[in-house]
Length: 208
Ligand code: AP5
Image (cartoon, rainbow, N blue to C red; front, side, top):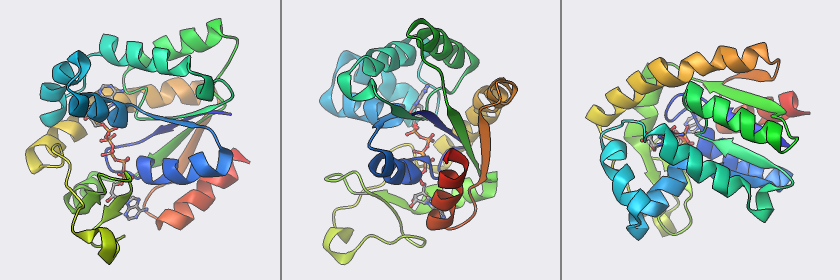
């Protein structure tokens, strides 16, 4: 199965990907997670990405496309993948399409989890993650259990200023690729405002 999860910042892509990855036993490829790991490791890519990410800008297409196309060649992605946060621009969508065509593969579904801007801000402000396990929490909607509460952290780009830019980038660069997938007949639209469990159920229904 080859699935893309698309949606505004903090619409719940990572939360849903964690469940879907277990359910379908496919590779979860999150460009945000890969870039944050590169930053933490201090690699040249990480150093280059840092300024873009901390201010909410998109990392340049050529860097992200190379990163993903290399990742897709790894063994665990050969039998299926769940792309989270990629593609985010028309150039990324076209590069992915071309690479899949060449490999004789195609996208089965693009799951578009949508929430309004007001919800994005609400979710981003309360988001915390566990640096040891990567688990995602929300102070109000999904509080971290007491044993991890002391170690959860807030992402550097979850600031009010960066969120404004991330939303602007989403509306200007990412939203326009939704019709690209709608025309291909693979777009599945999901209301991301429901509870996480209800959103999972809706995704499983459209993937069935
Ligand atoms: P990335 O890490 O991809 O960030 P994003 O798309 O902004 O998405 P988020 O990770 O913020 O949110 P999410 O949708 O996964 O929501 P989550 O499940 O955490 O990218 C970060 C940066 O990296 C970009 O700004 C860019 O600089 C760079 N980048 C990455 N990919 C790139 C690319 N392809 N090209 C160029 N640059 C790229 O949930 C959010 C919160 O809400 C959590 O607290 C969660 O507990 C809560 N929540 C989740 N679901 C629900 C629900 N149903 N109800 C209530 N609360 C919920």
